[in-house]
Amino acid sequence: MSKIGAEVQRLMGISVYAECPECGGAGEYEVDVPMPHNAGRDVGYLDSEWVTCDECGGEGQVEKTCTDCGEVMSAWDTNENDIETVCFECRHNR
Image 1 (spheres, one colour):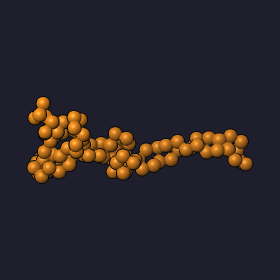
Image 2: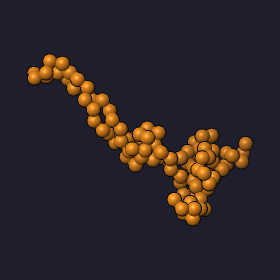
Image 3: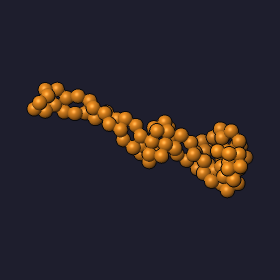
Image 4: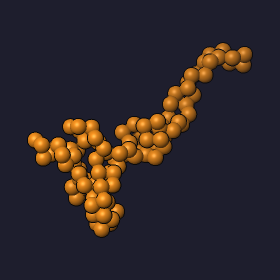
């Protein structure tokens, strides 16, 4: 994002997004599906399938939250490098 776009988001208080910790930003992940034995096969086996991530709804990103209070952070709370993990209120109440 451009510096002007980031500054507009910061001033407007638009939410900041981070990579989804559940799917790693992919929006989906692979799960094991047990397949039971049947008439043509005498043993069961594990198959796999891709499912949409419930945490991010398939978007690959979630709203960033403050590590102290748990509130959703806005662009106003972050710094230029986007590495802040504490919101503006908690940072100034310490």
